[in-house]
View 1 (cartoon, helix red, strand yellow):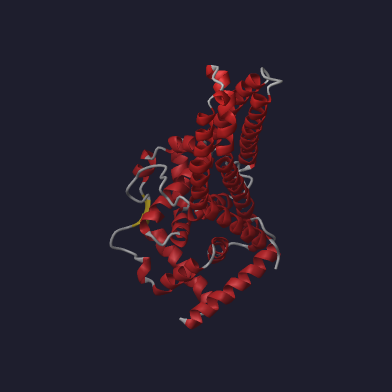
View 2: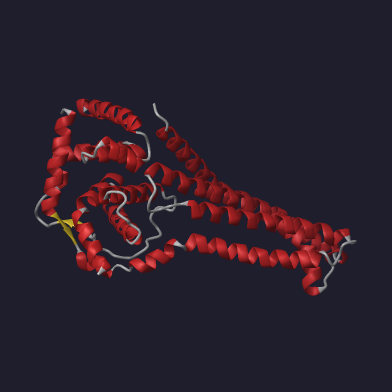
Length: 163
Length: 205
């Protein structure tokens, strides 16, 4: 029963998990591992979710925290928690290929150049989150979010104009 | 490309993902998620085992040492061994304290990353201490363990004691320094750097 509920939540937020994995791992194999790791962390905390925060805030926090920790893990991904070969969230065959979407491909390349924390910030910004929510997810002030967003915007603008 | 256009492109991308992403429910159900939960507790269990072993060993060494209150040759190594083990136990207790303060599921990103990396730094630094103190522990423990376990006075066999000391110093220290350089030095520097980045990120510009 609990697992059914969990699967239904994951279905609703699979885009978010997919985008976070693509932003933190350029390598498909690592992306698959990160996806599993995020799902494990979400499942482990699922029973503790008490609805005080928004569901999206809870998912962003856990998924981004897991991605940052995974990205920084010194013993890089040698310690897989589960051994599953296929990706749990994947694109349907023969349909949309994001790599062929030029702007998105370039955007991912720029995101890759950012550090772990700025990656989280730009993802929240691109997903159209309110500054208040971004501040809550990241744990910094709203003013700080605004300042950092404008700095990253400038960086992206320069990157795009140079391209 | 303007930034608003970029945001629109991202929204468009999100819509396409909604249409094209599929969740492999069967695979998700098959994943042994419970086992993973147990694996997450591994660092905590390791520290608990370390503390238990440390306390048992400390009790044994302390009780052996007090049997020789007037024999400095056993009293002093006993005290040194006890101090080193006590510091190892204390480090494990501090690591458990740090671990229990980490709220994996209800903390903002900066706070959680700071807690995780503070724990990592403490872990790496205590490993450094363990590595460097081990040869001293081995040398100091030789006389007291010899007399307590087998009633063997190592001072009556100075050659064995000297060989033990030389081995501990040469193999121990060179090995530990190599291990530290290759395993922990870079990790400590990376963790410290990331903690600085997090503090900078938290501060308003």
